[in-house]
Length: 60
Image (cartoon, helix red, strand yellow):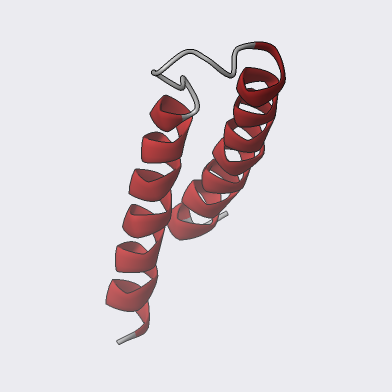
C-alpha cells in the first residue's frame, strides 16, 4: 500500500476520533474551555496534508 493511502486512512481514523471526542465533550463538559478534540484534529490535518503532498509529488 502506498504511503499517501496509509496517511489518508490514518487521517480518517483521526477524523472519526475527533468527532467522537467533540461529541463527548459537548454532551458531558459544555462549560470547559479546552476541548481535547483539538489534539486529534491537528494530527488529522497534518496527516491529510502530508498525504496530499505525497500524492501530488508522485503524480506530477
